[in-house]
Image (cartoon, rainbow, N blue to C red; front, side, top):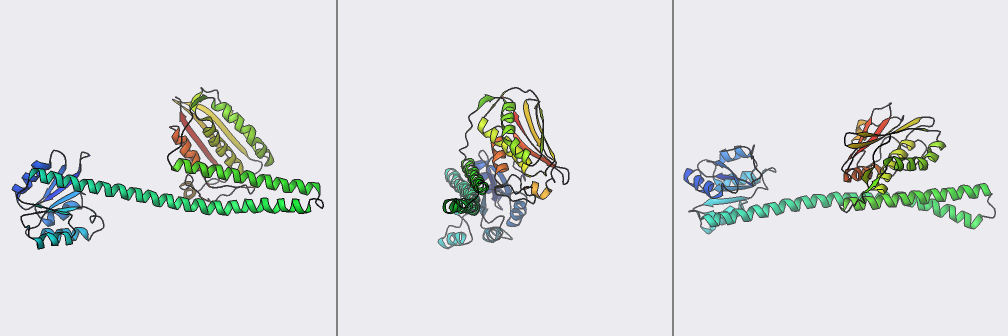
Length: 372
């Protein structure tokens, strides 16, 4: 008897109080399967506490706990009720077979054993068990996707309704009362409309990114690119928002080799990290942006002087639609999708996205991508 499976072979537990029967079945099955044996129902139940087989061949007539009682105990426990049990017995009367099925067995193999029949029945039930497991995994995935869909629709309907209400309200006022409004007020309303539409467009793009990523259809257009140029371009875009909050962007961008990346997707990640740092930083602070070459990789980091991120929030950072304790310092919008998307995009490049934060001492986000 062996308690651990050193191979990837399917595991079978044979339970029979007759050593000859055990030897015959081991000889039939040993080449293709990992075998463990027990000579009583009690011993079998003890083995299963440490060794979880994929299939059990269970003798009916045994001293102490017989096969039917052993099967009954297995089916009454959550951890073992899903293991298929095939009875092996010389008793082939209809009432015995019916009782075996009633106790939870999936099949009968009668003695004396036929080599080909034993193999065929074992292979069939292991295949069925494999399909059941695959179906269970698919079902779990569908549940996760359904939960994601519900969050998707809930967030989209709530936030987009707010943006559309703002656009509708301000545009209606401009349409009906534009002659009575001061030019400054008109400009203010137009800015509200523009900002709401920008937020909506960003949210739609993020939701589309999530859809592509979760469907497994994310494709990269890898080209030799200068990461430094991508960062410079992104800083130029975000400088306006930093200036509005009197936030200083301090750069330390070393000359590094070009690398094979999808410029749009890596640019999206860079924008997410820099814009998040600006959103969650107080006015008058500094954000440190660094690019350097490591061993076989490029390392980009953004460090802020914000409030930091709690351990509890760090555990949720890269999940979809998470609303964290820390909030943007000037009321900026946040969908809770950016970091989850960024992590998947960096992972698709063969890299990793990390966070290092301590409450009261700011936060550093960094990613590493390999030099190809």
